[in-house]
Length: 199
Image 1 (cartoon, rainbow, N blue to C red):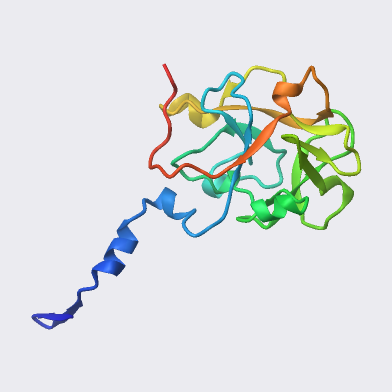
Image 2: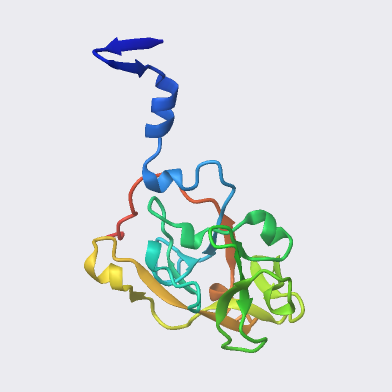
């Protein structure tokens, strides 16, 4: 339907208006996308859980830096925590926003996890089994959250969300490190606004 107001013609199409307004900017980023967080199975010392994350935020994301775990970014901008679940099934930890895959710097304990062009090489070929992520060629090496306490991020020190971070590296799969080596794939929550620290 057309409404003429002075010299202007206004097209009233409520479905278009509602589709634009239906999502906050942070929610719209995941609309129509099949993406997941790679989330720690146990909360450790962060009740909001840790997710694999690229250091930095928005235009300050540093794709050349070693990956870490960060308070899961539910309800806010989180493209730097999104993974392609179809790629995970094929053995690749691919981040669709950047078109890059997680690779171990080496097949040894303490090796950092970095983003590389997806080439299917041995150091970026993963197996997700029994909630563990290990290298297919080196199944004794698991993706492992660091043993140190979580620390406030730079943003966490100045914002009320108080986000936390912790190191991430390759480690020998073991019972001793079990709680830091178990993961789950989980879709981001459909919510607006960061989850505040629990009291």
